[in-house]
Image 1 (cartoon, rainbow, N blue to C red):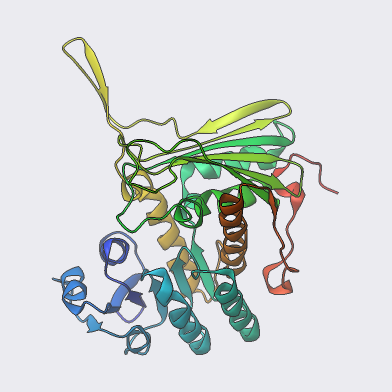
Image 2: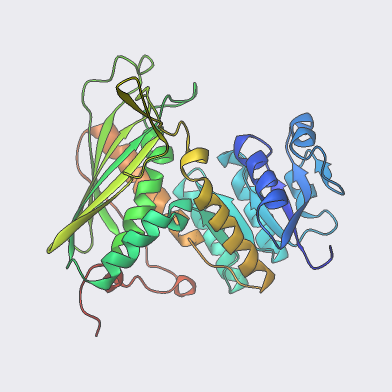
Length: 350
């Protein structure tokens, strides 16, 4: 057991409990040695039947528990900064579920703390980068086969929003995935945001502006539109189509089981993200564990988490004002390398 990466999982809710299961049953090379949650009964339930796992009310206590060599943050976003700063101070690799922190100011503090260590320690949980369809689209765009990407059409639909969901959270929580996916797929930064608000659906809670159409402009001249509809009522659905100079490519049409009976066909639709992206989560955590065991960190960086926060805040401002809001992004620290616009734009390499 000593050769396994000892992981502290912070947060034992829906996401955290699923990661405890994933590390224990699916991902090789690691084991959960500590779990923290203010609701210790929930933490106990998450690790029921697993041996030698300490349970803590306090996140930092779990980080300092014996055997911890890496940290997985799945707690509510308001608790992320403390946990990330504690992990950075101890030089521990971290996989942090998005968002990195609740806002760009605190996210920048985390970026600066990591930079002071002089090496990457944090991977942000933008799991779409590990989805097979998204990865295939990334490779296709990067090959230049279709030429330069001109447009991305995206859809992000949920069955129903949680009780605490606000109109701004459609952007800061849901569309944050499209923010990262667009930056990654295109190899470009988002430079401006506009939000259009149709008359809310009758299925949306009172006062919730749902759906919304979010428009991004990018540094490479592409335009991205995102339909976000968190009370669609029928299922969890994510789609993305890249329209390029010499063709287009679309993901998200892959179906689950289709049942034909009695002269009718019935198609199953995933009901939440843990179903739709189950394989992506497995790949993400497996890659994180493998890198951490070798003393490396790969995947979406703390800077990617910070960039998503900056763009999301511009989007929330665009939602509030009804206008076009430019994105003010500071200079990218050398620790995180340079953005290569050619990477997925179809432009020839120098």
